[in-house]
Length: 159
Image (cartoon, rainbow, N blue to C red; front, side, top):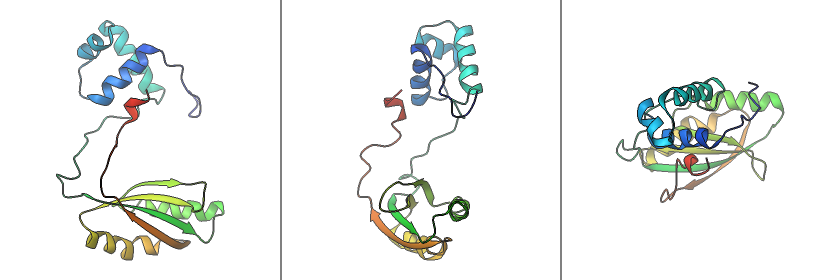
């Protein structure tokens, strides 16, 4: 299936995705029971969703606060060059900075929005000085510190 094509998902496919979003370690037998199908068709649907790229992988989720990573900053980034080569160079550089949790190219008054997760404000200032400020084609940044996460990881709500 072409990466840009959206597969036709029926209610059972969507139910599989909702259950897996809540518990990615559920057994196929239990998944089948949860969605109201037998094991074989559930397993076939699961393989198809993986093959079609709807399910891209399975992983453990960690509590960042328990890991001491409760300082979250959002950073607006403006570049002085937004031609494709400059964007590609910027993109390649940001993926190498582990504290950058998310990066989005934005249509608006700035070019990128980054989510940075660190242990403290001092740690964020170090990341800003040593890594973010040295990114290629960077014109300026504006930082916004999050006080509380109200909602995260809610893709299962829209499936």
